[in-house]
Length: 194
Image 1 (spheres, rainbow, N blue to C red):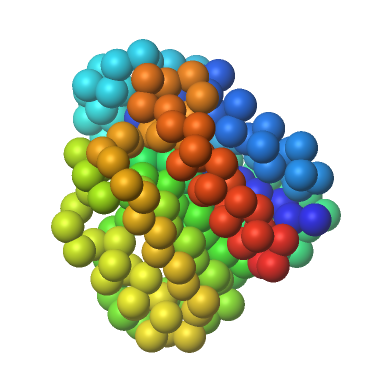
Image 2: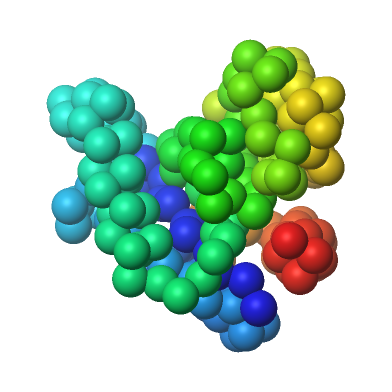
């Protein structure tokens, strides 16, 4: 079974994150949920993004890195899958491309572009988002998947119909059960192979 470090969105470590982590836990995997928002939870994306901007992304990245160091130090696992939703996908992407114990990265509703040589061949990649996601940067997830594949990693990029952002979160208005079910099937297949 896999050990997964799952990063929350700009809304913070809310009940939706716990519900989504339960999908992985119920399949027998170990899931860690670092809280790089220090307990702050938001119901509106704009408020969560304002908090991100006030704290600054570099500071949030430091918090995430410290949490990962603590998790890794206290775990018997040799390899980790890093996953993240929206803002958290930036964290997962960073650890996926550089952490020496990364077995893979799962990016939900986001994905940027590293330098082609910066991805690790040993870290598989899977990206999920809707075609009309308001936070989707045209061409960026596609280029990231290509860069990872060119570096020698297995890479998959899945686009879903519609324009919902957090469509896999059962506590949000964007939730789409059909899309979420398909996404989790793909995620569990990925995690079981990593």
